[in-house]
Length: 317
Length: 300
Image (cartoon, rainbow over all chains, first blue to last red; front, side):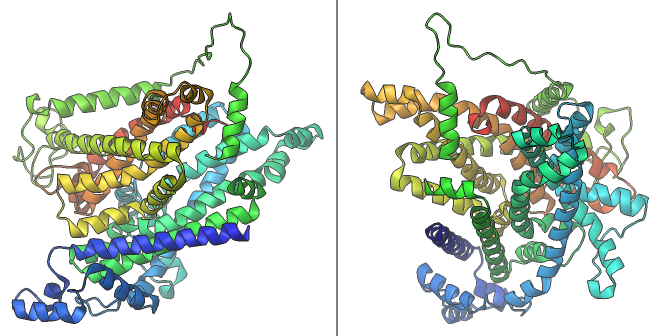
C-alpha cells in the first residue's frame, strides 16, 4: 500500500509538472510580449528588447520554465506589471471568497441531494421517484450562466430578498455576508444537485438490495431506521468522494458566477486579467487552480484507498 | 473499469447455450417517456431551423427590425420573440445562434470522438508503455478545470470560430480516450477476439474488424452528452465575452448582452436561456437513454 501511495504521489507530481509547463509554454505564445505590456504601447523597440533581456524572455523555453519553477517553489509567482500586485498576494486576497462560494454551493447541493436521493431511492419507479428524476435532469441542464440571471431576476429584482450583485465581507457582518453569497451559491449548486442525486440514488438502490438490509427488515425495523441507520452510510461513500473532487473543480469553476455577481474571487481575477492581457497574473492563477485541483484529486484518491479495502485490492491486481 | 468488473461480466455471459436456441439477447422493452419524444422533436426543429435559416421568412440577424428591447408580441415573425438591445430580431438571432451552437457541439464532439476513440483503443489494446502514456495524457488533460483551460486558451488566441473549436475539441478528447480504453479492455478480453487471434488475424484486423464495431455504440451514446457540455462551454465563453465575436449571434452572447436590462426587459435573457436549457436538456435525455442501452461498462 505504501508503494501504491508513493506511485500515486509520483504520478500527481508528474501531472503538476506537465500542467505547469503547459501553462508557461502556452502563455509565452501570447500575442504582444509581456515587456510591451509593462512598458506601454509607446515604448521603443530597444526598450522592449532590453526588458525582454532583463526578464529572461530571450532564453529558450525550458530555461524560462525552470526559472519560473524555481521562483514558484519559493512562493514567488511573479508580480503583475499592470497593478504592481504580487500574484501570490492577489491569490491570497481572493481565495477566501471563492472557497466560501464553493463550500456553500456544495453544502446546499449535498443537503438537497441527500433528501431527494433518500426519497427517490425509497421507492424506485414510483411517481415521486420519477418526478424527482425529472427535476434532477432539469437541474443538470441549467448551467450557471443561465441560473445566475434567472435567480437574480426572481429573488433580487422581483422579491428583493437578496442583493443582485456585490459582496459583503464577513467582517461587515455574517448576515450581510450570507445574503450576498446565497444566490451565487445557489447558481453553482443546481448542476451539483443533479450529479449528487443521481449518484446517491444509484448507490442507495444497490445497497438496499443487499442481504443485510433484508435481514434488518426481517428483524422488523421500521423503514426509516433501515434507510438511515443501515443503508445511508455505506451508500454515501462515493457521494463524499464526488463532493471532494467537485470542490477542486469549483475553485476554478466559479468564474461565471463571480463575474456575473461581481464577487471579488479567483475566477473574476482570471477573467479580468485575461481582458486586461495581464499574462503574468493569468499564468500564476491558472497554475494555482490547476495545482489545487490535482492536489485535491490526489488526496481524494488516496483516502479512497485507505478507507475502502476493495479499491486497494484492485489497484494491486 | 476495474478487472473485477470484467471478470464478473464474463462469467455472466458464458452461460451454456443449447445449439438449437438462437443465441439472442432478449430485448428489454422500455417505456419511452413523453420527455424523450419532446426532446427529439425539439432537436429536429432546431436542426431544421438552423439548416434552413437563410430560407426562413424573417429579417437577417444583423439589421434592426424595430425599436430596441421590444417585448415579444404576435404579429410579424420578426418580433415574435421581441427585439434585442439594438432592435434586431430575437428570433432571427436565436436561429442563427443555433447554427453556431450546433456546429460547435457537433464538430468538437465528433473530432473528440474520433481522436479519443483511436488513442484510447490503441492504449487499451496494445497495453504496456503506450498505455501508460495514453492514460497519463488523458489524466493530465483532465487535470485542468475545463473552463480555466478555455480561458487560458482565450488569453493566447484571439477568439474566433476556429480557436474556440480547437479549445473545445481539446476538452472533449480525454473523456473519450478514457471511455474508449475502458471499453477496449472489456472487449479485448472476450473469446471472439481470442478466436480471431488464433485464426491468425493481425493487430490491424482485430482492432478494426473485431473491436471497433463494439466500441462505436457506447462512445456514440456518450456523444450527445459531450455535445451538451460543449454547447454549455461555448455559452459560458460567449457569456464572458471571450466567445464568438459579434456581430455573429451566439446564445451565450445574447444572455450576456441582455443581462444588464433584465429588470425591465427579462425576455432579453429568458428567451436565449430557455433555448439553451431545452437544447441541453434534450441532448442529456437522449444521451442518458442511449447510454443505459449501449454502454456495457455502466452495467453492474
